[in-house]
Length: 126
Image (cartoon, rainbow, N blue to C red; front, side, top):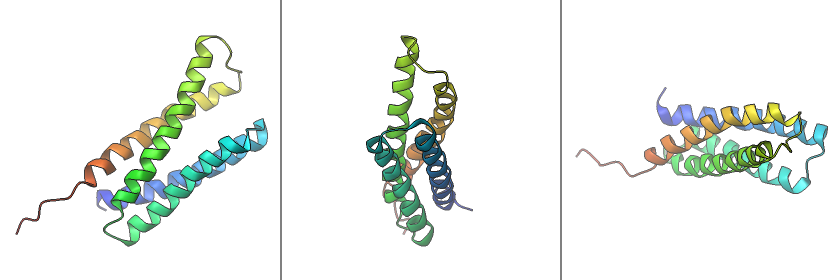
């Protein structure tokens, strides 16, 4: 399997897990609908870009955008929790989210960087 297909399947898998986890978190901790909307945009982008990338050889740019947006959302959520930890205002239940966000950041940022590099036009060896 080439890297483009892998990134497509990773986006779909990540999007499904992200949707389930975010919906669970929203229902359990009464997250605002505005915050949930930003997360669902990320899920939508990952799923659509992953599917397009699997069906087309030209979907890597969409995938780069989806991974970039997702990486930014993950980074912002991570920073919010880190700042709250520094002033001892992070609720105990957020500790798990903090650990999940570290993993999500590693995956999403790595996928963003790889898809970004792959999205540059390739020289034709003719």
